[in-house]
Amino acid sequence: MERTTLGRLGVGALIFAALLGVTRRAEAIAAPNLCIPARMAPVATSIPHNFPGFGYDVPSAATTNVHLVDTTKGASELPVTLGPVTAPWNKVSPQAGFTVGDSYTLTFDSLCYGGMTLPEQKPITFTIVADAPIPTTIGDVMGTPTVVVKDHGTSEVDLDAIYTLSAEMKPWAAVYELALEMDGRTMETHANVASAGDTVHLTSRGWCDEVSSKATTHTVRLTATLPFSPGLQTMTTALDFTCPAPHIVTPTAGVLTPPTPTETTTTPTSGAGTHSGGCAISASSASSAASDGILGGVGLLLGVTVILRKRTTKGAR
Image (cartoon, rainbow, N blue to C red; front, side, top):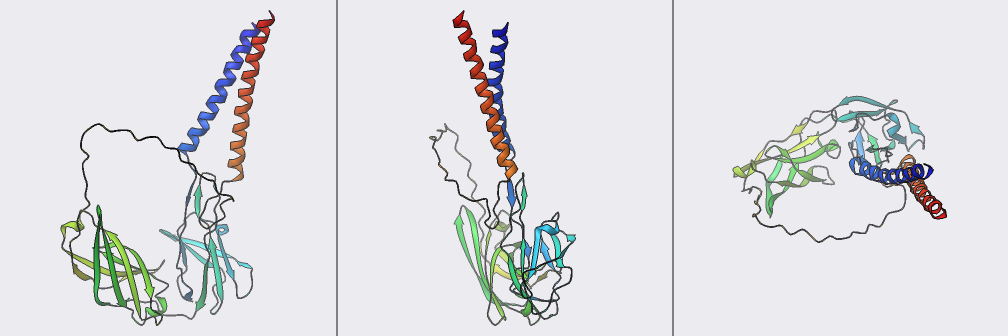
């Protein structure tokens, strides 16, 4: 009776150890840790005093996720107010307001899930300058934007354009987010404002789709956005060019040869993820993994010990 009970205990311990390892591996695959880099706008070195406030795209953020320091007066952190939320922006402003002529740094956290920490993003460093009227116009296009279409299977569209800036837009040109639109769709845009502040050079990239491929004349315009302010746009410019649709190829039926298995070696990096926008494994996650490993090892050791004892007792008899 004793040998039967011990044998069952040993088998049970081995099964427990195996199931524990499988369960933890499944949890790691099903629920990976995730960090989403947060955005704060505007990002500019000089900001007029009467701007509406910073926009933070984490609606659920707390004041502990945002850190504002007046570097002109010292290193003391200033209390901030969050809200109201106007999707996607959560308004951030100092409780005592900004001071014209002072310089500030603003740091903020990313949004992480799965027990991860919220590492700080790269700080925004800026100076508050005198009030300026909120602009109602952007400016006008200079000449004709140039277009280059590149075939990558899906056609890439590169636009290069220069726009003049209106007098009311000049103090705000680096504060607003400037982007080109093609056929009503925002393109990935890099804006370079001239040192005189009277023109902006824009290089943009977009992609052709089924809709744009049906037109030979396309519209382009410049847009300007700032959290908690009305959006602005220029008059549209018509450009004539073809925008081929994506090449979708149907695979030929046949026998598929499975790929040869390869082994990939990953070299772990040191540190706890303190770089900008990174994710750091929390101490609770690490200790949990260590505890699981210890439990699995204890279960396996118990099973082997019981089986060896069973064999020793049988041999003695």
